[in-house]
Image (tube, rainbow, N blue to C red; front, side, top):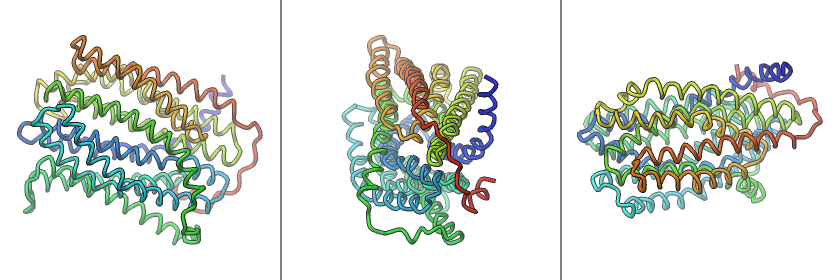
Length: 467
């Protein structure tokens, strides 16, 4: 026991050094949607405006993160190549990920435009739908910048270049706040576009953050001569197939998770604007808390992948368990905040007392699954670093869609629990997923190679970027 504790203590410092900028980046990503919700929440008929952004953002995130998931094979390929000190191979993976992003941009944009018909088919409240469709149309145009951001980010963080990722998200949020102020309320001579203006502001902010990361990659290569421009420019079909082999299960897994929350949002939309607004408040809070273990998950993927790349299985194992403990610890604190401060949290989003009361109940349900949500997302990252992207996909499919959602639907519409019933179903699915993936990681560590080789010397720029 003491030996295990000491090994975890050894890993905490490098894990936190890598994780905190990624946590900031994830929080920044989540904060964009929260800012959109808060700023349209000050428009007349707050509940309808919040509900419209809720639906549009839910569909936009579901499709956008599917595209981003296709590129998450970079976590495995780049981190393991970097662990083996094959930097040129890292560049090769990035280039082919960009080709992949370009190939999927138009299909994903078409899917997002077509997804608006889903809201019509589900008979979402007419007033909410009228505002949601223009918002959805606006954020559709951010698809290519979003995919380029995902590719650039995974490449950079797998090579321990994490600070530019945090900088891009923080500054992009400033751009989004300013853009919302101008376009929602019609400031500085711009037309007052309301909810639609918030969508265009998000589009501009996403373009900005992609440009920041691409510019940093070019600048970094010029400064250190890493050989980026010496990589063959033609597509490598074998590398693209490898990216897809790793990325497709991740994309499906993300879509299954985001999709179940998006479908839940659409189902809540049938219950009226008040319950939809309360659902959106609780969902933003749960999503914001989720961003911290999600950042830790990304760090886990990198540390596990680098450990295996340099043939250090004990280090990879230690990295995974340390990350899971950190994620579980944070989400336990998040659960306490949801239980002890629900009214204060809800008032941040809206002054409407009816929405606040409904939100407090959903926050109590969210508190019940925080610990397991933290465990499952960090375990997903650790497994991805080890090259296992299929186990999380199947666990999400079964536990969310075949267990959690049916139970939630039954409680909501057959037992008349309303939005609370849907959230209880999601809670059950998340608890079971967390337990399954914890066991999967435990079993995976026994398959690591037992031998350990001395790692090669790190590039001159690595320690500078981590300090």
